[in-house]
Image 1: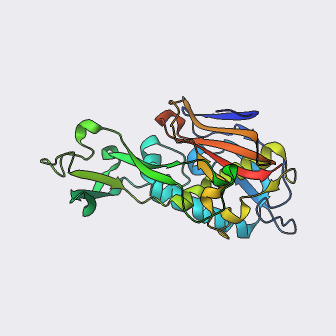
Image 2 (image 1 turned 180 degrees about the vertical axis):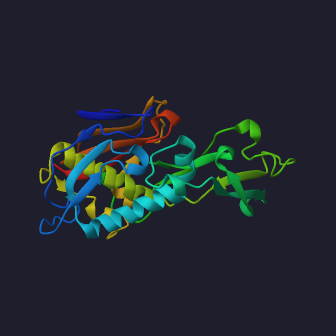
Image 3 (image 1 turned 120 degrees about the vertical axis):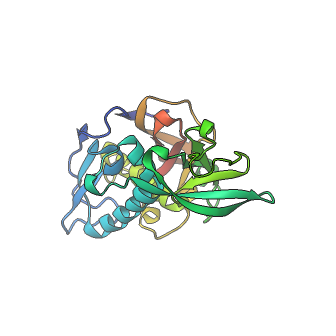
Amino acid sequence: MTGNRIVFIDSSNFSGPSKRYAPVGTCIYCGTSTTRLGLEHVVPFGLAGNALLLPGASCKNCEAITGGNEQAVLRQMLGPLRVLLGLPTRNKKDRPVEFPLYLDKLKGGVWTPEEKLVAQTHELPGFAYLRLRRAGILDGKPASGIIDGQLEYRHLNPKEMFIPQRFKPDMKADEYRTRVGVFNPEKFGKMLAKIAHAYATAEVGFGLFRPLVTDFILGKVNTMSHWVGGDWKIPPAHPAAFQLAIENVSTGGYRYLVVNVRLFSFLELPQYHVVVGEV
């Protein structure tokens, strides 16, 4: 991961304050400064606890939008993995111990939903993740609503044929697959953009770059792959839980501020980049 400012969040301790930035005094998403502004967790609390805190950075309206999107990602998409890893939560008593497990069967070369099961946390067969290609703006491509990427699945225990054997003792690995929860690429992309924008603001300073992803974060446009991309080749695993880095990228006569974001580095998952602004 390259960049002139790099932070690593330790995978052995997902919680615990590590850095608190100076208050911004302006909503970093809509620009208002005439209302009460709340604290922003640069990386959502449900992933990294209080690791990176940015005070006075979000108005209630924008907080409701970004918070609602984050909850969808943390609960619906990353919920089982968060429970499995023991990631931070504000409601430990409400933390689920069972999850819906969707079983698909290969029929005529097409994966077809077969059955909905219920699995306990320790039976989690794997998790979905998103691979993205390079952000379109860096290659001069026009903005579009098409997401340039691919949803993939990481199985935790191939020897179990991707599903607890108590469900399907006679299951053949090449005929069945399982899915845990749902995965919405656009919502996941918004969370990446929010992390990147907040981190750039915290490190570089509010008003020192022209923001490019705030409309996408707030749901005003759906051109995710224009701003949010990734390295198609997945880097080797890194002991850090999460990695953030900032770099300047010059292309097409423009100089962009790009934030690299890698979630769950120790699980050997992709590195993403978000073109947060124009320098």
